[in-house]
Length: 488
Image 1 (spheres, rainbow, N blue to C red):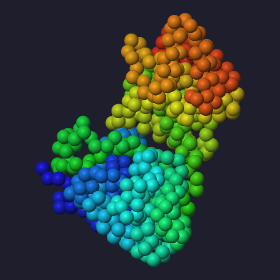
Image 2 (image 1 turned 180 degrees about the vertical axis):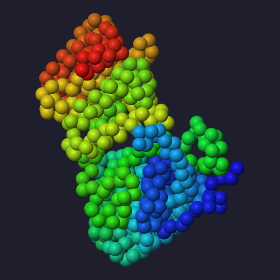
Image 3 (image 1 turned 60 degrees about the vertical axis):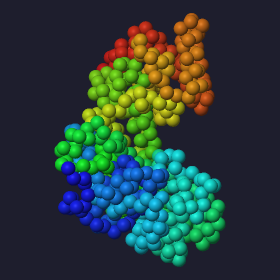
Image 4 (image 1 turned 45 degrees about the vertical axis):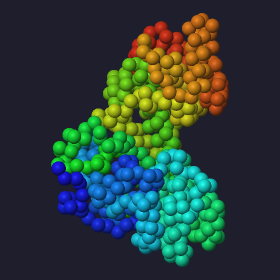
C-alpha cells in the first residue's frame, strides 16, 4: 500500500508560502492548517504554511516525506447529528528542520509574501532563556527562534515597515500575544540588536493574543488499521479532531482584510477584546467539566458522554449551565445560549472518550478558578445560593475523601492538599470532628480558595446538609432527590 504524497494525490496544489508555523503537532495541523485550507478553497487567500519544529522531532522528516499532506478526520456532533468525515489537508508546503537546515529558515525570512507567524509551543514555551544567543543555530527557546527570524527579516528588507508580520500565538496562556512580544523585546535588548530593530518590532509587526478551542485526540492509534483500509493509503500523520472549533483573535480590524474568514463558515472571530470569549469558555466549558466531575464520578459514571446522556446527570449539567452559569455572564443572550448549547452538544460527542478522572486533576484549584467566580456572581446578583453548583462543591469535598463505594479514587493533586483532606476525613471517621467542622475548616482555607468562603451567607449550612445527605444515602439518591425537588 502506498504512502500519501503528492505523487498519488492528484489534487496536490502549490500556494505561496505566506505563513510560518512554529509547531508540527496534531493541534495546529487539525486546527490552523485545516482553516488555511478552507481559506484557500473559499477565498482568494492563496497561501501555504511552512512548518518548523520548536524542539527536535522526527515528525518534520515524516511531514516532508508526505509532501506536507495528511488526512484529517473530524468526528462529532454537526447539526445535531454525529458526523464522521475526513479530508486530505494540503495547506503545508514543507517542513524545515531547524537543527539540520537552518539556512532555509534564514532564507524564508527574506520572502516577500510571508505575512503570518503562528505558534503553539505549550504553555511553558513563551519564556526567556539567558543562555540563548543569536549565533545559535537555532536558539533553544521558541521566542529566541522567533526573535532571530524577525531580525533576519529586518535585515533582509533593510528595516522596511511594509515587511513586518502578523504574529498569532495559540499557547493557552492569558494575553499570549502581549506576553510573546515582551519576551521578543527582552531578547532584542539582551542581544543588543539596536534601537532601529526594536522600533521595527513595534511599528511593523502586530502581535495578536488569541483563544483556541478544539478537542484534538490526535493520531488514531486504536483504529489506524480500520482507517487505513478505508482510505486505501498509509498516512503516518493522520489526525483526529472534533467537529467544533473556535478561534478568537484579538487585533485591529484591518486584519479581517488579510485573513478573510467572513463567509467561509469558519468560527474564527477577529475582535477588539477577547476577554468575554475567554471568560465564557472558562466558565461554561471548563466550569461545567469541573462541576460535573465529582458528581458524575461519585454517581458511578466514568466519562463526559455518559454523564451528559444520563437522566439525572444530564439534567444536573443542563440546569447548572443554563440557570446558574450563563445568567452570571455578560454578553448578548443569544450568543451565550448558542455557545452553551454547542458545549452540551460537544459533551455528547460519541467519538471521544473524555474520562472524568483525567478532568479531576487538581480539581480544587480548578473549582476555585472556573466555578467560584460563578458562585460569587450568582450570590451577588440573586441573593441566593446556586443549588446545583453548591451540590457540586459538596460532592467535591466528598470526592477528596478518596472513596467511591469500596473503590479507592486515584486522587491527583498537590500532596499538601491531599494530606489536608485525608486528615480531616480521618477525624470525621473517628468522631473527632463533626461534618460542619470539616466544612468550615475547608471553606475557610484561603490557600485553597484565595478567600474565606465561610463569609458567604448560608454556604456552610448548605454544604454541610448536602454532605450529611450524601453520607446517609449516597450521591446517587441525593442527586435524585435534588432533581425531584428542584424541577417542577
